[in-house]
Structure formats: C-alpha cells, structure tokens
Image (tube, rainbow, N blue to C red; front, side, top):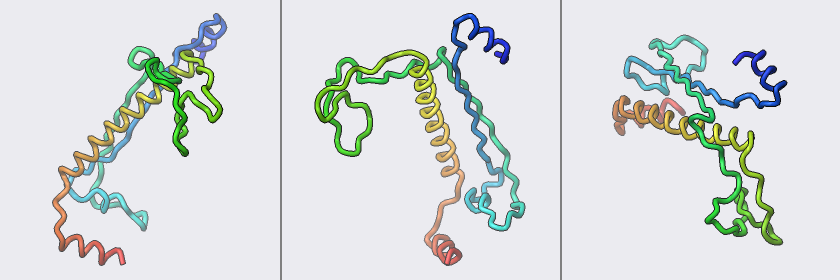
Length: 151
C-alpha cells in the first residue's frame, strides 16, 4: 500500500489495514570457529573469517494473527495480584476493576507484537541451538586458557 492509498482509505472513513513486519539479520560463521571469539573485535579490525548474513523477514497481519485479549479470559475470576505483579488481574486493592474495552485497532496491534515476539523467540532459539551443535566441545584445559586470557 502506498502513502496515497493510506490517505484515500482514511478519507473514506475506513481505517487502513494494520500490519507489522520484522526482519532478522543474523551472522552465520562458515568456518566452524567460535562465533563469540570471531565477533568480538576490540580494535575494530577485520576478523579473519568472514560471516555471511542470513536475513529472515516475517509479516504479521490480521490474516495470520488474532487480536489480543486485553482482559481476563471468560472463565478466570479476578484476584488481587501479588506484589510486583503488574499484569492485568481484574482486581484492585478495593475491589474489582471495570472490564477493559476489548477488540479494536490496539488489540490487533498487540496481537501482532505478541506473535512477533513468539516468532522471534523461536527463531533465536533455533540459531542458538545450531551454534551450540556446531561449536567444538569445551575441554577443561581450553576453559582454563580462556580464563587466563581474560585476566
């Protein structure tokens, strides 16, 4: 949708469609070396092994994300939250809170953000697991050498 399309949609009284696009750019070292050692560069010099960048793009909209539920699900009773718990509980110190307004544009945007967070967590977990599988096992001797370098 171009900016002219957005203006036209707003002039008609129809809200423009909402969406959220995310893009991950993750370095993928190809030589099997320790990624942490290769990526840390205190002198801003080029590292010997070049990393390729894997770009992943995702789009979240009403076709693939439900609107978020703002309040409590219908089967959950309001309870006073524990100290330090700032999630919606439906209860205040002096009694129940009024029900929040459900649906609408903000609920849809919150749904997109929740779906993007879940997708990001899943994607980054896969990247971490892949790096762990490719990394050589750390021996006690290598661990001691690394500790000595840090001092």
